Amino acid sequence: MEKPALKPKNPNFSSGPCTKRPGWSVESLSAAMLGRSHRAAGPKGQLKEVIEKHKELLGIPEDYVVGIMPASDTGAFEAAMWSMLGARDVDAFAWESFSGDWLTNIKTQLKLESVNYYEAEYGALPDLSKANPENDIVFAWNGTTSGVRVPNGDWIAADREGLTFCDATSAVFAYDLPWDKLDVTTWSWQKVLGSEAAHGMLVLSPRAVERLETFTPDRPLPKIFRMTKGSGDKKKLNKGIFEGATINTPSMLAVADVLDALNWVQNIGGLRTTIARSEENFKAIENWVNKTDGFEFLAKEPETLSTTSVCLSITDEWFTGLSEDEQNVFIKTMVKILDKDGIAYDIAGYRDAPAGLRIWCGATVQGDDVEALMPWVTWAFEVSKAEEQRKSEAA
Image 1 (cartoon, one colour):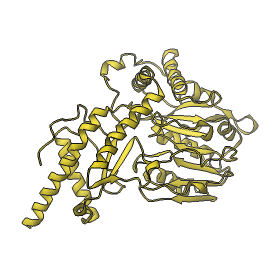
Image 2: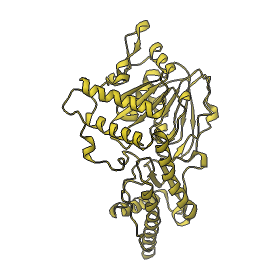
Image 3: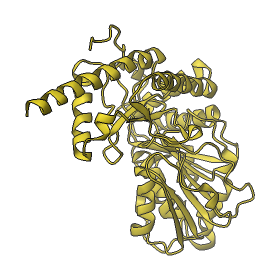
Image 4: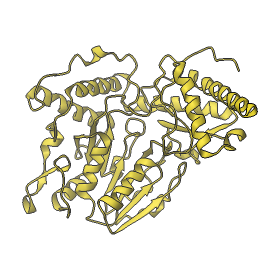
Protein backbone atom coordinates (compact mmCIF):
# COMPACT_ATOMS: atom_id res chain seq x y z
CA MET A 1 0.00 0.00 0.00
CA GLU A 2 1.35 3.42 -0.97
CA LYS A 3 2.15 5.89 1.78
CA PRO A 4 -0.17 8.90 2.12
CA ALA A 5 1.33 12.09 0.76
CA LEU A 6 0.40 14.51 3.55
CA LYS A 7 1.84 14.27 7.07
CA PRO A 8 0.48 15.94 10.21
CA LYS A 9 2.51 19.06 10.98
CA ASN A 10 2.38 18.18 14.68
CA PRO A 11 2.61 14.44 15.53
CA ASN A 12 1.76 14.90 19.23
CA PHE A 13 -1.50 13.04 19.88
CA SER A 14 -0.75 11.87 23.42
CA SER A 15 -3.64 11.77 25.90
CA GLY A 16 -1.49 13.29 28.62
CA PRO A 17 0.59 15.25 28.83
CA CYS A 18 -1.13 16.62 25.75
CA THR A 19 0.24 18.76 22.95
CA LYS A 20 0.92 22.44 23.61
CA ARG A 21 -1.30 25.17 22.20
CA PRO A 22 -0.71 26.20 18.57
CA GLY A 23 2.17 28.64 18.34
CA TRP A 24 3.64 27.75 21.73
CA SER A 25 7.37 28.25 22.28
CA VAL A 26 9.74 28.42 25.24
CA GLU A 27 9.51 32.20 24.98
CA SER A 28 5.92 31.82 26.17
CA LEU A 29 7.36 31.19 29.65
CA SER A 30 9.18 34.51 29.89
CA ALA A 31 6.80 35.72 32.62
CA ALA A 32 7.81 32.88 34.98
CA MET A 33 8.86 34.15 38.40
CA LEU A 34 11.74 31.76 38.93
CA GLY A 35 13.94 31.69 42.00
CA ARG A 36 11.19 33.38 44.03
CA SER A 37 9.19 32.18 47.01
CA HIS A 38 5.70 31.11 45.98
CA ARG A 39 4.54 32.95 49.13
CA ALA A 40 5.86 36.29 47.86
CA ALA A 41 3.34 38.79 46.51
CA GLY A 42 4.26 38.40 42.83
CA PRO A 43 4.23 34.58 42.58
CA LYS A 44 1.17 34.32 44.84
CA GLY A 45 -0.53 36.83 42.56
CA GLN A 46 0.14 34.58 39.57
CA LEU A 47 -1.30 31.58 41.43
CA LYS A 48 -4.40 33.58 42.28
CA GLU A 49 -4.67 34.64 38.64
CA VAL A 50 -4.68 30.96 37.59
CA ILE A 51 -7.64 30.41 39.94
CA GLU A 52 -9.53 33.49 38.80
CA LYS A 53 -9.03 32.82 35.09
CA HIS A 54 -10.27 29.23 35.45
CA LYS A 55 -13.33 30.45 37.30
CA GLU A 56 -14.10 33.13 34.72
CA LEU A 57 -13.48 31.06 31.59
CA LEU A 58 -15.38 28.00 32.83
CA GLY A 59 -18.35 29.95 34.24
CA ILE A 60 -17.90 28.47 37.71
CA PRO A 61 -20.52 29.91 40.11
CA GLU A 62 -19.37 32.82 42.26
CA ASP A 63 -20.09 31.02 45.54
CA TYR A 64 -17.93 28.01 44.57
CA VAL A 65 -14.27 28.00 45.65
CA VAL A 66 -11.40 27.01 43.33
CA GLY A 67 -7.97 25.88 44.49
CA ILE A 68 -4.65 24.58 43.18
CA MET A 69 -3.64 21.18 44.56
CA PRO A 70 -0.45 19.10 44.42
CA ALA A 71 -0.03 15.89 42.41
CA SER A 72 -2.21 16.72 39.41
CA ASP A 73 -5.82 15.55 39.10
CA THR A 74 -4.97 12.45 41.12
CA GLY A 75 -3.82 14.47 44.11
CA ALA A 76 -6.86 16.75 43.96
CA PHE A 77 -9.31 13.86 43.74
CA GLU A 78 -7.57 11.83 46.44
CA ALA A 79 -7.57 14.84 48.78
CA ALA A 80 -11.30 15.24 48.27
CA MET A 81 -12.11 11.57 48.83
CA TRP A 82 -9.92 11.18 51.91
CA SER A 83 -11.23 14.41 53.44
CA MET A 84 -14.95 14.08 52.75
CA LEU A 85 -16.09 10.51 52.04
CA GLY A 86 -17.58 8.52 54.87
CA ALA A 87 -20.23 10.96 56.03
CA ARG A 88 -22.85 9.20 53.88
CA ASP A 89 -23.26 6.00 51.92
CA VAL A 90 -21.43 6.08 48.59
CA ASP A 91 -22.41 5.16 45.03
CA ALA A 92 -19.21 4.60 43.04
CA PHE A 93 -19.38 4.31 39.24
CA ALA A 94 -16.46 2.85 37.25
CA TRP A 95 -16.02 1.90 33.59
CA GLU A 96 -12.31 2.34 32.84
CA SER A 97 -8.97 2.47 34.63
CA PHE A 98 -9.06 5.79 36.48
CA SER A 99 -12.64 5.57 37.69
CA GLY A 100 -11.69 1.99 38.59
CA ASP A 101 -8.80 3.36 40.66
CA TRP A 102 -11.20 5.53 42.67
CA LEU A 103 -13.41 2.51 43.25
CA THR A 104 -10.41 0.48 44.43
CA ASN A 105 -9.28 3.26 46.76
CA ILE A 106 -12.74 3.52 48.30
CA LYS A 107 -12.87 -0.24 48.77
CA THR A 108 -9.34 -1.17 49.85
CA GLN A 109 -7.69 2.04 51.13
CA LEU A 110 -10.48 4.08 52.67
CA LYS A 111 -12.26 0.82 53.53
CA LEU A 112 -15.68 2.41 53.56
CA GLU A 113 -18.39 -0.07 54.44
CA SER A 114 -21.58 1.44 53.03
CA VAL A 115 -20.64 1.54 49.35
CA ASN A 116 -22.54 0.51 46.23
CA TYR A 117 -20.29 -0.37 43.29
CA TYR A 118 -21.59 0.03 39.74
CA GLU A 119 -19.17 -1.12 37.05
CA ALA A 120 -19.14 -1.59 33.27
CA GLU A 121 -16.67 -2.98 30.76
CA TYR A 122 -14.54 -0.75 28.54
CA GLY A 123 -16.80 0.85 25.94
CA ALA A 124 -19.92 1.04 28.10
CA LEU A 125 -21.31 3.08 30.98
CA PRO A 126 -22.72 1.58 34.17
CA ASP A 127 -26.38 2.21 34.94
CA LEU A 128 -26.25 5.82 36.12
CA SER A 129 -29.91 5.71 37.11
CA LYS A 130 -28.79 3.73 40.16
CA ALA A 131 -27.42 6.92 41.70
CA ASN A 132 -29.21 7.51 45.00
CA PRO A 133 -29.80 11.22 45.80
CA GLU A 134 -29.23 10.44 49.48
CA ASN A 135 -25.72 9.11 48.83
CA ASP A 136 -22.42 10.61 47.79
CA ILE A 137 -21.70 9.85 44.11
CA VAL A 138 -18.18 9.23 42.78
CA PHE A 139 -17.56 9.16 39.01
CA ALA A 140 -15.45 10.42 36.12
CA TRP A 141 -17.06 12.68 33.53
CA ASN A 142 -14.83 11.50 30.71
CA GLY A 143 -13.19 8.06 30.77
CA THR A 144 -9.75 8.96 29.46
CA THR A 145 -8.74 5.36 28.84
CA SER A 146 -12.00 4.17 27.27
CA GLY A 147 -13.22 7.14 25.25
CA VAL A 148 -16.57 6.92 27.06
CA ARG A 149 -18.14 9.93 28.76
CA VAL A 150 -21.33 10.64 30.61
CA PRO A 151 -23.61 12.39 28.10
CA ASN A 152 -25.04 14.96 30.54
CA GLY A 153 -25.87 15.62 34.17
CA ASP A 154 -29.58 14.82 33.94
CA TRP A 155 -29.11 11.66 36.02
CA ILE A 156 -27.91 13.69 39.01
CA ALA A 157 -30.74 14.90 41.25
CA ALA A 158 -30.98 18.68 41.68
CA ASP A 159 -32.32 18.20 45.22
CA ARG A 160 -29.71 15.58 46.21
CA GLU A 161 -28.65 15.27 49.83
CA GLY A 162 -25.28 13.69 49.09
CA LEU A 163 -22.34 15.25 47.28
CA THR A 164 -21.14 14.51 43.75
CA PHE A 165 -17.40 13.84 43.35
CA CYS A 166 -16.48 14.31 39.67
CA ASP A 167 -13.08 13.56 38.14
CA ALA A 168 -13.31 15.86 35.13
CA THR A 169 -9.70 15.86 34.01
CA SER A 170 -10.32 15.06 30.31
CA ALA A 171 -13.58 17.01 30.26
CA VAL A 172 -12.87 20.53 31.50
CA PHE A 173 -12.61 22.99 28.56
CA ALA A 174 -14.07 20.32 26.22
CA TYR A 175 -17.64 20.15 27.55
CA ASP A 176 -20.05 22.63 29.11
CA LEU A 177 -20.23 21.12 32.58
CA PRO A 178 -23.39 21.58 34.69
CA TRP A 179 -21.78 23.12 37.77
CA ASP A 180 -25.07 23.07 39.67
CA LYS A 181 -24.86 19.25 39.58
CA LEU A 182 -21.20 19.10 40.67
CA ASP A 183 -20.07 19.56 44.26
CA VAL A 184 -16.45 18.37 44.07
CA THR A 185 -14.72 18.65 40.69
CA THR A 186 -11.08 18.07 39.79
CA TRP A 187 -8.83 18.25 36.74
CA SER A 188 -5.21 18.82 35.75
CA TRP A 189 -3.45 21.40 33.60
CA GLN A 190 -2.00 18.78 31.25
CA LYS A 191 -5.17 17.76 29.36
CA VAL A 192 -7.30 20.10 27.26
CA LEU A 193 -5.15 23.10 28.17
CA GLY A 194 -2.03 21.26 27.00
CA SER A 195 -0.08 22.65 29.93
CA GLU A 196 2.33 20.94 32.32
CA ALA A 197 1.55 18.09 34.70
CA ALA A 198 1.88 17.76 38.51
CA HIS A 199 -0.67 20.42 39.47
CA GLY A 200 -4.40 19.83 39.94
CA MET A 201 -7.48 22.00 40.25
CA LEU A 202 -10.20 21.49 42.85
CA VAL A 203 -13.63 23.13 42.79
CA LEU A 204 -15.95 22.93 45.80
CA SER A 205 -19.61 23.91 45.99
CA PRO A 206 -20.90 25.58 49.19
CA ARG A 207 -22.29 22.20 50.25
CA ALA A 208 -18.86 20.59 49.79
CA VAL A 209 -17.27 23.34 51.91
CA GLU A 210 -19.88 22.65 54.59
CA ARG A 211 -18.95 18.95 54.50
CA LEU A 212 -15.28 19.81 55.01
CA GLU A 213 -16.07 22.04 57.97
CA THR A 214 -18.54 19.72 59.71
CA PHE A 215 -17.24 16.20 58.99
CA THR A 216 -14.10 14.74 60.54
CA PRO A 217 -13.06 11.45 58.93
CA ASP A 218 -11.95 8.59 61.15
CA ARG A 219 -8.53 8.31 59.51
CA PRO A 220 -5.27 10.24 59.43
CA LEU A 221 -4.84 12.81 56.64
CA PRO A 222 -1.43 13.55 55.09
CA LYS A 223 -0.52 17.23 54.97
CA ILE A 224 -1.16 17.51 51.22
CA PHE A 225 -4.79 16.37 51.80
CA ARG A 226 -5.61 18.82 54.60
CA MET A 227 -7.89 21.63 53.48
CA THR A 228 -9.14 22.89 56.86
CA LYS A 229 -7.76 24.60 59.93
CA GLY A 230 -8.79 24.09 63.55
CA SER A 231 -10.97 21.34 64.97
CA GLY A 232 -14.44 20.73 66.34
CA ASP A 233 -16.69 23.79 66.19
CA LYS A 234 -13.69 25.88 65.14
CA LYS A 235 -12.87 23.76 62.10
CA LYS A 236 -12.93 26.01 59.02
CA LEU A 237 -11.90 25.87 55.39
CA ASN A 238 -8.30 26.91 54.79
CA LYS A 239 -9.26 29.77 52.50
CA GLY A 240 -5.64 30.45 51.59
CA ILE A 241 -5.57 27.34 49.37
CA PHE A 242 -8.34 28.91 47.29
CA GLU A 243 -6.63 32.30 47.07
CA GLY A 244 -3.22 31.20 45.79
CA ALA A 245 -1.51 29.96 48.97
CA THR A 246 -0.88 26.38 47.87
CA ILE A 247 -0.41 23.50 50.32
CA ASN A 248 3.07 22.77 49.03
CA THR A 249 5.56 24.44 46.69
CA PRO A 250 4.33 24.71 43.09
CA SER A 251 6.46 25.05 39.97
CA MET A 252 6.35 28.70 38.98
CA LEU A 253 7.52 27.64 35.51
CA ALA A 254 4.39 25.49 35.21
CA VAL A 255 2.30 28.36 36.57
CA ALA A 256 3.59 30.65 33.81
CA ASP A 257 2.80 27.94 31.28
CA VAL A 258 -0.79 27.42 32.41
CA LEU A 259 -1.37 31.18 32.45
CA ASP A 260 -0.17 31.23 28.84
CA ALA A 261 -2.65 28.45 28.01
CA LEU A 262 -5.50 30.22 29.79
CA ASN A 263 -4.71 33.47 27.96
CA TRP A 264 -4.77 31.53 24.68
CA VAL A 265 -8.23 30.16 25.55
CA GLN A 266 -9.41 33.67 26.31
CA ASN A 267 -7.94 35.07 23.10
CA ILE A 268 -9.55 32.49 20.80
CA GLY A 269 -13.04 33.02 22.20
CA GLY A 270 -13.17 31.12 25.48
CA LEU A 271 -14.96 27.91 26.39
CA ARG A 272 -17.25 27.85 23.35
CA THR A 273 -14.23 27.83 21.06
CA THR A 274 -12.33 25.12 22.93
CA ILE A 275 -15.46 22.94 22.91
CA ALA A 276 -15.89 23.54 19.17
CA ARG A 277 -12.24 22.72 18.43
CA SER A 278 -12.50 19.38 20.24
CA GLU A 279 -15.75 18.55 18.47
CA GLU A 280 -14.25 19.38 15.07
CA ASN A 281 -11.21 17.21 15.76
CA PHE A 282 -13.44 14.35 16.82
CA LYS A 283 -15.55 14.81 13.68
CA ALA A 284 -12.47 14.20 11.51
CA ILE A 285 -12.05 10.78 13.11
CA GLU A 286 -15.76 10.04 12.98
CA ASN A 287 -15.82 10.75 9.24
CA TRP A 288 -12.86 8.40 8.76
CA VAL A 289 -14.48 5.63 10.84
CA ASN A 290 -17.69 5.91 8.82
CA LYS A 291 -15.87 5.29 5.53
CA THR A 292 -13.14 2.88 6.70
CA ASP A 293 -13.66 -0.85 7.12
CA GLY A 294 -12.09 -2.60 10.08
CA PHE A 295 -12.29 0.18 12.65
CA GLU A 296 -14.95 1.42 15.06
CA PHE A 297 -15.19 3.42 18.26
CA LEU A 298 -14.64 1.57 21.53
CA ALA A 299 -17.62 3.46 22.97
CA LYS A 300 -20.81 1.53 22.22
CA GLU A 301 -23.37 4.36 22.31
CA PRO A 302 -23.03 7.52 20.17
CA GLU A 303 -24.08 9.87 22.98
CA THR A 304 -21.24 8.57 25.16
CA LEU A 305 -18.44 9.18 22.63
CA SER A 306 -15.62 11.26 24.06
CA THR A 307 -14.50 14.16 21.89
CA THR A 308 -11.12 14.35 23.64
CA SER A 309 -9.66 10.89 24.32
CA VAL A 310 -10.97 9.11 21.22
CA CYS A 311 -10.51 5.34 21.51
CA LEU A 312 -10.71 3.04 18.48
CA SER A 313 -11.19 -0.72 18.21
CA ILE A 314 -9.93 -2.77 15.28
CA THR A 315 -12.70 -5.00 13.94
CA ASP A 316 -10.85 -6.44 10.97
CA GLU A 317 -11.58 -10.20 10.88
CA TRP A 318 -7.91 -11.14 10.68
CA PHE A 319 -7.07 -8.99 13.72
CA THR A 320 -9.96 -10.23 15.85
CA GLY A 321 -8.78 -13.78 15.18
CA LEU A 322 -5.52 -13.11 17.01
CA SER A 323 -5.02 -13.87 20.68
CA GLU A 324 -5.07 -10.99 23.15
CA ASP A 325 -1.28 -11.06 23.46
CA GLU A 326 -0.88 -11.14 19.69
CA GLN A 327 -3.22 -8.18 19.33
CA ASN A 328 -1.20 -6.16 21.85
CA VAL A 329 2.05 -6.97 20.05
CA PHE A 330 0.49 -5.98 16.73
CA ILE A 331 -0.65 -2.61 18.08
CA LYS A 332 2.88 -1.93 19.36
CA THR A 333 4.28 -2.74 15.93
CA MET A 334 1.74 -0.56 14.18
CA VAL A 335 2.22 2.52 16.36
CA LYS A 336 6.00 2.10 16.25
CA ILE A 337 5.85 2.58 12.48
CA LEU A 338 3.87 5.80 12.91
CA ASP A 339 6.28 6.97 15.59
CA LYS A 340 9.37 6.21 13.49
CA ASP A 341 8.01 8.13 10.51
CA GLY A 342 7.12 11.12 12.72
CA ILE A 343 3.42 10.73 11.94
CA ALA A 344 1.95 10.19 15.41
CA TYR A 345 3.39 9.73 18.87
CA ASP A 346 1.80 7.82 21.76
CA ILE A 347 -1.49 6.67 20.19
CA ALA A 348 -1.58 3.07 21.45
CA GLY A 349 -4.58 2.34 23.65
CA TYR A 350 -4.11 2.44 27.42
CA ARG A 351 -2.26 -0.58 28.79
CA ASP A 352 -5.31 -1.97 30.65
CA ALA A 353 -7.77 -1.27 27.83
CA PRO A 354 -8.63 -3.65 24.98
CA ALA A 355 -5.98 -3.58 22.22
CA GLY A 356 -6.62 -0.55 20.05
CA LEU A 357 -5.74 3.09 19.47
CA ARG A 358 -6.28 6.28 21.46
CA ILE A 359 -6.00 9.65 19.72
CA TRP A 360 -6.19 12.90 21.68
CA CYS A 361 -8.51 15.45 20.09
CA GLY A 362 -8.54 18.20 22.71
CA ALA A 363 -8.56 21.89 21.85
CA THR A 364 -4.79 22.28 21.42
CA VAL A 365 -4.79 19.76 18.55
CA GLN A 366 -5.23 21.18 15.04
CA GLY A 367 -8.03 19.72 12.93
CA ASP A 368 -5.84 19.55 9.83
CA ASP A 369 -3.42 17.33 11.71
CA VAL A 370 -6.18 14.90 12.69
CA GLU A 371 -7.40 14.73 9.09
CA ALA A 372 -3.85 14.12 7.86
CA LEU A 373 -3.26 11.40 10.47
CA MET A 374 -6.17 9.10 9.68
CA PRO A 375 -5.01 7.83 6.22
CA TRP A 376 -1.69 6.99 7.88
CA VAL A 377 -3.53 4.86 10.43
CA THR A 378 -5.05 2.89 7.57
CA TRP A 379 -1.66 2.59 5.89
CA ALA A 380 0.15 1.49 9.07
CA PHE A 381 -2.49 -1.16 9.74
CA GLU A 382 -2.34 -2.61 6.23
CA VAL A 383 1.47 -2.62 6.15
CA SER A 384 1.70 -4.28 9.58
CA LYS A 385 -0.97 -6.80 8.70
CA ALA A 386 0.74 -7.74 5.43
CA GLU A 387 4.05 -8.23 7.24
CA GLU A 388 2.48 -10.44 9.92
CA GLN A 389 0.71 -12.54 7.30
CA ARG A 390 3.99 -12.92 5.39
CA LYS A 391 5.73 -14.10 8.57
CA SER A 392 2.91 -16.54 9.28
CA GLU A 393 3.05 -18.01 5.78
CA ALA A 394 6.86 -18.31 5.92
CA ALA A 395 6.62 -20.21 9.20
